[in-house]
Structure formats: structure tokens, C-alpha cells
Length: 81
Image (cartoon, rainbow, N blue to C red; front, top):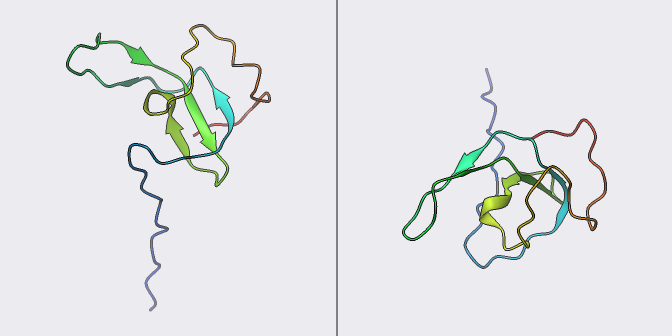
């Protein structure tokens, strides 16, 4: 019996460049409290060109509050991380 190999996901480090292709603003909230930062949850997720989803909290994209996505991103109906 052959074992299936797990699909490895890329590991990104601070400063790595990634290509964001779409964004959802109603995903599972992510909280990353830190020194000098307020404690709040961010429900925004970004899909990368390789199909991986990452919390927007960990990107350097300009912050935009509210339910509307930035104009640079196409609509992402039905897409989920």
C-alpha cells in the first residue's frame, strides 16, 4: 500500500513578495495582538496567484475598513480559503 504524500504549502517570510489576485472581506477573523497594537479581529483574506489564501493582516496592502474590497481586486463570488 502506497502512502500519499501531503501537499506542501509554501512558507512566506516577512518581506517576501506575493501576488494577490483577489480578496474576501467576510472570512474567519484573525487576531494578532502585539506590542503597541490594539487587540482586534480582521476578517480579510487574500488569495495568492498560486491558490493559497493568507490573512490580509500579514500583508503590506493598504488597510481598508468596511465590507468593500479595494478597487484593484476583482470580485471573488463564492471563493473561500
